[in-house]
Length: 275
Ligand SMILES: [Fe+2]
Image 1 (spheres, rainbow, N blue to C red):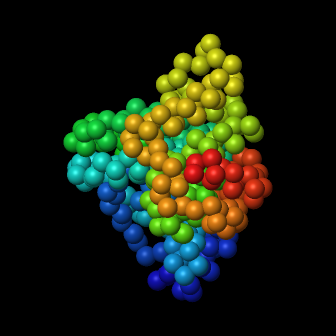
Image 2 (image 1 turned 90 degrees about the vertical axis):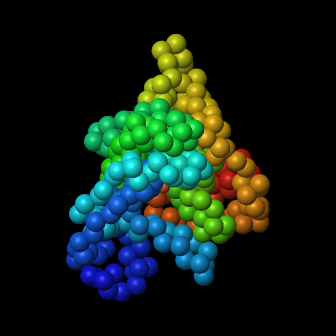
Image 3 (image 1 turned 90 degrees about the horizontal axis):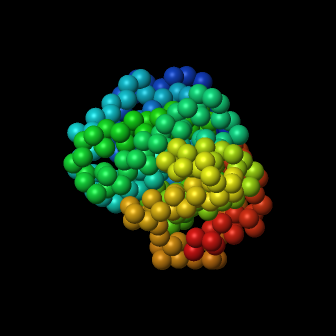
């Protein structure tokens, strides 16, 4: 804003709308989650109208991103878990995105491997430097993937839960990821077979449907292990807000690259399945 002027909302009605580079920005990362230290995304919460929306602009990218696991060893367990599930969601949504490329695919698949193999370890023992390092590489690779391939309905829907109920972004993603993936897998099942393999599942003797289901179950099982498999109703979400949130989710820029188009009712039903 300092370099380009106007209001932040002026930059949310499309992508890459700013004209000039921002002032030089150096970021020092303290979680293995959002990848905001290196992506083209920023997330804005408008408390007046209870919405949360992404602003996507190449000029947001910092000139230097510092990632040092020393800065993460004291992260509380729940923050470690929710930010880690956010990173996993970035990788999965980028991998099934309509804008995915071989470059983002390679980043996303490696990110899934690293996160799935290390998230439980860092939640159990925050001092595990090897696992913390691996989570940093995982979240950074997931950031490379989604900064280029963008995201999907998990993020569109999680933004609304954050805007209306002020719930943790990573927790919302963790709750929705397997359910949105169940919806998307009807369109791109082969992508979820790849995700199953990246999660360490031996799919050799499985049908495509079995492999897809194994991936979805593994996502929820990991979420359960790290304490993020929760019900929306228990977090204060009420049915009367679902249509409002579903409409805003469909308008969210992250919805543009979701592999399967949903109706308002289908988005409401995904929310309901996790109530
Ligand atoms: Fe995210």
